[in-house]
Length: 63
Image (tube, rainbow, N blue to C red; front, top):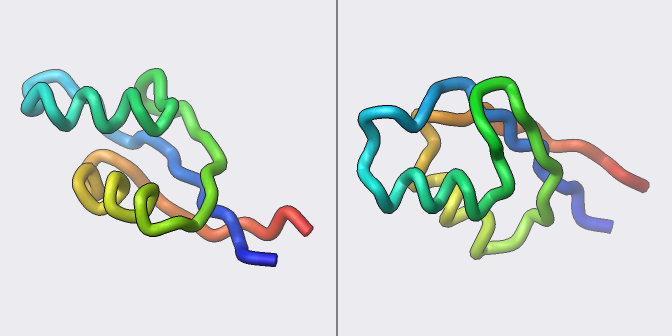
């Protein structure tokens, strides 16, 4: 089974471009300190790459 990714928001979206705010919201993050577990797919990796300076990413194994 593919490992999943835990994405934790480390910085606020205040002062960021609107598209980055939408991307963070689309990942399911609600604000600094919130975290979600998402599938390790190209679409999620692309979204994470766009806002990499606002989040921390780690692999988790939900076997």
